[in-house]
Length: 271
Length: 284
Image (cartoon, rainbow over all chains, first blue to last red; front, side):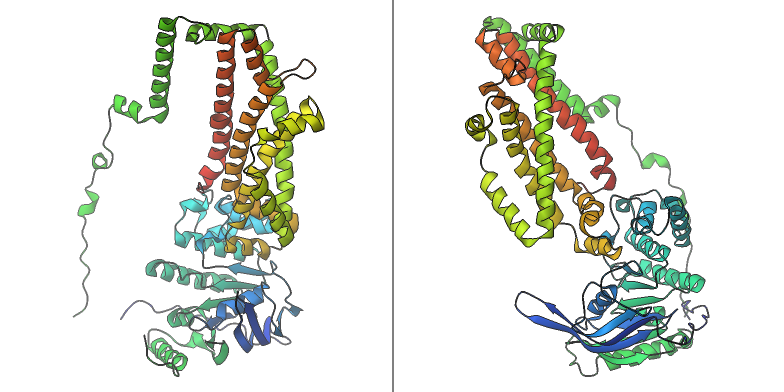
């Protein structure tokens, strides 16, 4: 048997009274290309509770990244509305920190410490001294203290993503928005980064909205998974209680198969 | 059958000797680009001296030693230093105004589409026009004086810097832009906290090109007319000495132009590069 058995994790905080932390209601997103207006998602609704590890899962073209960017405030829904903490999302803001897939999301002109401090300082959230203390704390959490004065170009891909995560967490946002943060990493590094994200979550119980196209990653990361179907993106199903499956007794593999069959049910086997 | 892991320890035997093989000091010296280039420069100076001594015609081609003594004399009596100061003063004014105008133009261009069109049209129109070609016109508009010089200098700096800064801004990655917006940065704060540092390699290239254009343009302009209220620049120094057929002093003036150009390019800009784009690993 392999050693992928996960530490037992308590379930995320159950439904809080009142409104959910992130509420996406009947959202239709369209973006303009040179020739046409493309519908990315149609009539999508879901809600994320505080402490959730909510995964948007679907094949390419299901609008999951576009949806995440809409929650981030980078584009406005044509129909429906998005609220975070009860406030309607109108523009990007530091209450929703993004972690991107691309390695160039770090500012190359700032050190690791500078990168993590940057949002604290430009938003005026903390004084330089407090920002530094907080940044050092989160850099230590992601295990990069010895690289703290390095510039991003001296870091490996996995280290860069960990700095981005530290930068996002240090702002202590309402929700951390992660757009396939580990997709560009090699398989070994990806696995370490996933484990580390879960460990960090265990420590601080932040809320995360995570986009991926990997079913295995969705099961590993999430406690709830929203399945989206492509062209245009619509909600196909929602998986709850993902924490209850484990790799040890094969229930994770079973869930993976079920999700796969569900996602590709009406697709011809052409790949 | 279960998989088996066999531990191997032989990779610990490796010694440091294999990793770095020493090279001889002479070879190390030859690897140094500055040493090789100094060698070439010394050889050229020797050739100059030998040729000029054999030619023996100070009016056509003075020797290196004559040139150096003319240089020494001019420095000694203060004329050369005054000329340098006059040139640099005009240069800094023109360069500063040019860079400031370029900043305004590119900030407008990055924020509005009409501004982009304006910048692109203006740079396309004026960039191919050598600044010095505007000097006759400038003389009519601003008269003999610093005003005319500054006008042609601004023209020589503005378009090169604006063009490079703008293309640098445009090539900032979408991800970095989104990161900046994520922190609520907008307007000028967004430009100065995200766009300027992200586009810095291209901006620096623009500043270097602008400097090179400005220096050449200034010397050329001063050769046409250099003197205003008795305070001429380096170009004027060269022109003046040619008129009195003091050719070693002309050579000394040319040498000064070269040295100042080298110092600015290799000392000032190289130092800025080392502390910014080289440190950040973003050299283009």
